Image (cartoon, rainbow, N blue to C red; front, side, top):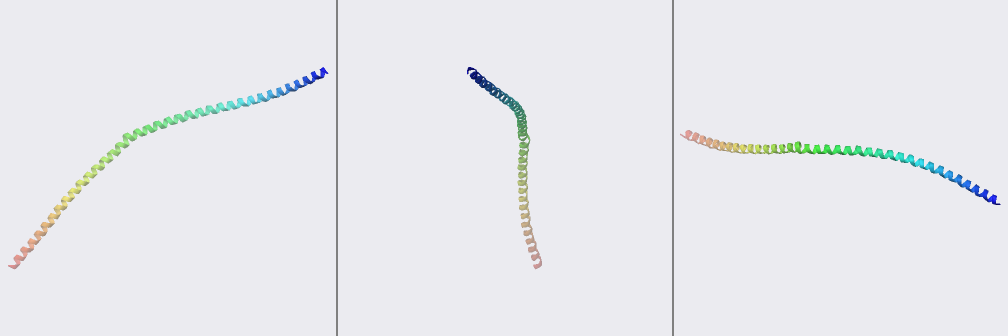
Length: 133
């Protein structure tokens, strides 16, 4: 009877060891899978780091280009706009001068028309006086 109990216990221990070996094999497989996933994850993190470095570099380059563009706008475009405004001002002043000269010429022409009419009337009057004599 004792031998049967010992055999029974030995069989159970053997079964437990078999189950334990199976669990260890499964655990080893899972550890291997986790290692593979960690390797893939490390690779992905490295790729993300490289992409971030490239992105930072592109942002830095873009900032420099924007700064240069701002400087160019400040130095060149603003000066050109100011020059155009000054030229426009000069053109308006010249147009005003021309308008004043045209007004004076118009006044002179009007005076000449009045004088011509006056002289025409005087000539007509003289002509009538001469023909009446």
